[in-house]
Length: 120
Image (cartoon, rainbow, N blue to C red; front, side):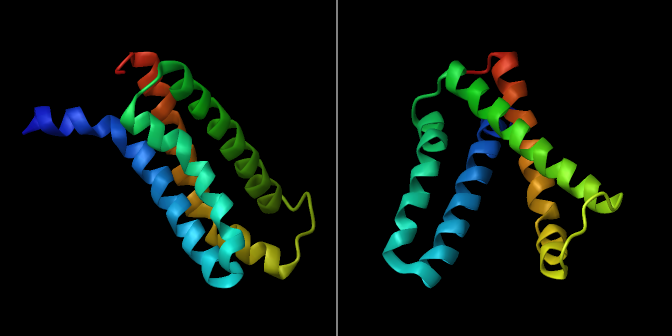
C-alpha cells in the first residue's frame, strides 16, 4: 500500500495546478465565454509533466511558481504591516486568495524537491 502511495505522490502538485487552472477556466468561461479558452494553455506544461516528465521543465516550473508565490506572500506581509493602503475590495481578494497562495507555494516547493530528488 505504501509503495502505491509513494509512487503517485510525485504527481500531486501537477494535479493541484491543473485543478486550479480548470477552476479558473470555468469561472472565466461563465463570465467571458469563448475568450476564456487561452487560460487552458497554462495547463500544457503541467499536463506534459504527467505524460512525459522532464527534469528541466520540472525545475523551471517549480522555480517560476515559487517566485510568483513569494511575490504574493510579500503582498500579504505588506498588508499585515500596513505598508500599502489597500481598498476594501482588494482586502477581500487578499483574504480569500490566501489559501490559494499558500497552496501554490507548498506545491511549488514540492515540485522543486521532486526535481532535486531526481524522481523523474
